[in-house]
Image (cartoon, rainbow, N blue to C red):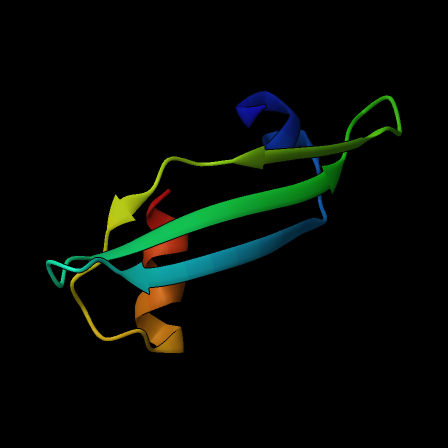
Length: 66
């Protein structure tokens, strides 16, 4: 999937953030794109702990780091 993402020039990114009962915050990232064979592709990246405020800037930094 990573190779397909690197070759593509258009990717949709969906994020979901939530807080557990023990107050740990998590983020999951889903990516959607068209593969080189023109078939729709998607992937869900593993959930990561996200203990910063859920602002657009912090989320953008985390997505860039992935």
